[in-house]
Image (cartoon, rainbow, N blue to C red):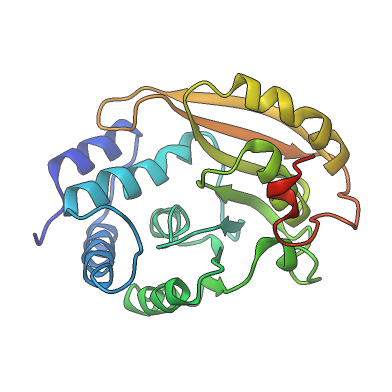
Length: 240
């Protein structure tokens, strides 16, 4: 399959985006290399080009009407796996600076490869590290405008992992789905302790896009205490 599916292109249009030829070629290369590497490394459970385009790429781009990505915006993609959502966001916004964080070394090998293939290694970097440890490194702590998280962790856990990375006024952007009211409610006490506040929840129900997709936006309003994030595994076992 040497072109992008009509479903992906129509979905992108519904988001208000027009891809140029270079961006289309980048998505094709990215899709094909995910499928090729997936034969030996478990990057994703998706096996077809159209699933990669819709469930990974298109879903990654659903935040573009919620967040304001400008020139030199600093973005951290936490638990990126195959580079999702950070690389699709980078392809769409080549002026941004994206850091991909992935703890599994096999996946970071793929990430470094694909950054070279797409010729975006000057604006995109890879960190093979646990978030709980990376948050305490000076070059990353409170340095980012946005932290993106598309994983399955609860909002309470994500708050602790993400907020230490954010500069004042920055935002955590969590991709969620379904009824998250209880999850949000359970996170509010810890959120205040970590220096954040719930700003908005956007719900998207557009054709071609995952139904019930919610984008949760958390704003950093005060400094995160130095003891957070706690040691690896503790935020998941004992959420604030």
